[in-house]
Image (cartoon, rainbow, N blue to C red; front, side, top):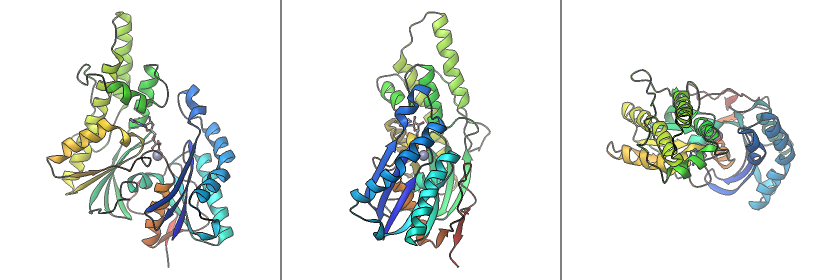
Length: 344
Ligand code: KG4
Ligand code: ZN
């Protein structure tokens, strides 16, 4: 069974054809990243215009690359939140138009769920497990009891992990997006050079806060430049990265231990960071927790994860009706997928 996935929640216009929920036949992405660079972050209007201009071509491209014409598609999966309202609407409208014309079922997919699901593609998932999304918009921990039973454990109270990287890179004058640049610089830096604060919050809390470490970086740079001291940018990047990752790894592993979860699924743009991956593996080893990451190309926003997650939910008996709407503030809920209805 072929699923067409559509993703337009932020600055990537993406379409993908996935066979039987696991075999990715195509995964096309047209990013507006270059257009946002000069502003140091995503400008919603620019992202929306780009989605509008590209969406039809990206879908056509994905179908061609999969050697599938529309008549072979049996399910349409589309991200309906969280994300930019206008951007989500463009994906949803395309999905509805195609689905109605083809008379096939439609399923709205939570973008956070899709990021977590990108780690499930290789199979062998043991429930309960812990899902963690570390992206530009989210730092979210969830307990997963089953494919369609997710409970929110904690989330960021201010900046998301990727957002903190993007802001740090801006402070350091390194460009956008910050994550990959900071990772590159950090490779030849000393992570113990600067003692940036780590916010663990209240005992037992699974929430995160990264605005403090970002402000500490800003003050550190100001102080150094006032004292006319030479700063080693690589050391700063390595220390900043460590302060963020140490907290993420600690909380996620504690969540797994506290819920008897044997697996930790880490998805989202920041999950591609090699230092984070190594820290997770090193820390979880002692507790016999297996850490799973997305395959190459599936960490950042893409439609293959949406198609695969949508297919899974469809097989679980869920689907959306054609009144599906964009939900910009959608979160990991108490197991329910708003707008997705059980098949009678
Ligand atoms: O998942 P994603 O593509 O979009 C959202 O859903 O937000 O994540 C984008 C974020 C950006 O903030 C970017 O700086 C960060 O992921 N990122 C990284 C790396 N690659 C991308 N952060 C740290 N290390 C990386 N290698
Ligand atoms: Zn994302």
